[in-house]
Length: 69
Image (cartoon, rainbow, N blue to C red):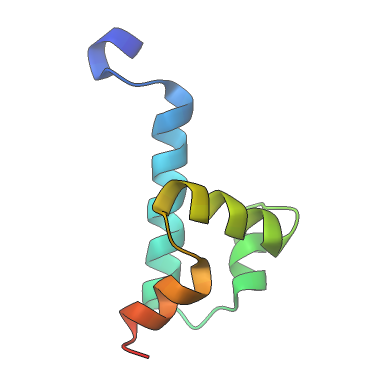
């Protein structure tokens, strides 16, 4: 499977999670704590580190930029 997609399953899952978090940040009024819980992250700080590592931006900055703040 890795050869077919030129990526690992973990990378594909990480990409999916980042996409879901971006969608929640963009389309909902859920707090970051609620999003972390929804996405099964133990703690909002873990979600923020994960998101920052993969998206290159913090959760609050991403939300602020999306909403023009």
